[in-house]
Each structure stands twice: as structure tokens, then as C-alpha cells.
Length: 143
Image (cartoon, rainbow, N blue to C red; front, side, top):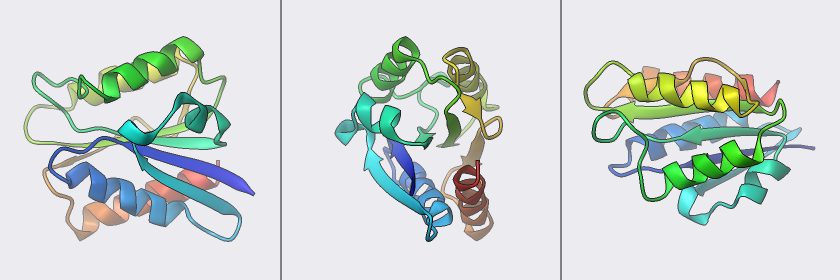
């Protein structure tokens, strides 16, 4: 059975909603999905999964959340991803998505096989946004 880890940080709940929809989309009879906040995740959770979705909203000057997600991502960079399928996602309030572009570049350098350039949704996801999240989960499940 294929395993997918959906690991996220959410301050307002918007990225959590996205994570739940991605997990919902990825689940099927042949895929086991583990959904967890980054504070509960270990690098082993990521390395032991067949595929991973990582979520974090844009913070401050379009950066990752600094106390939990950034250290986790830095550990990923040290460990490497060796071609593992990875989907990135997150919400934002303003800006042009620079945090996601930077994050995608970092994960590519760490050896990730990115599903796409990252799914970003402004503020809370509406039904169309949630369907985009479910579709991302389905795509990740079949990589």
C-alpha cells in the first residue's frame, strides 16, 4: 500500500482546510494518508512516506512560518528527498506568491520531484479552491 504524508502549518485554519482536502483527494483503496501538523511530524514521517504534501501559508515578507515549518524544511534540505514526489501548498493574504516560488526552488534543490509549482489560494479556500486541493491530492496519489 502506498503511503502519503500531508504535513502542514496553519495559523488561521486556511492552510489546514487545504491540507484536509488534499488528504481527502489522495485517499483511495491503495493509498494510506497520514495528516499531521508539522509540530507533530518528524523527518522520519517524511522519509518513510512514498509521497509528501507540505503546506504553509505565506508569512511576513512572503516567507515560511519561522518557528516550526522553516526548521522542518531546513532539515529536509539536509536529509535530501532523492526523487520523492512532493506537492507544496499554502494560503496567502497578499503578495504574488514569492514564498511558494522560493520554497519550490529549495525543494527541487533537495531532490524533490514536484507535482507542480505549488498550489496557492488567497485567504480561505472556497469550494473551487478545495476541489483544486482534492485534485492535487489525487495527482500525488498516482505519482
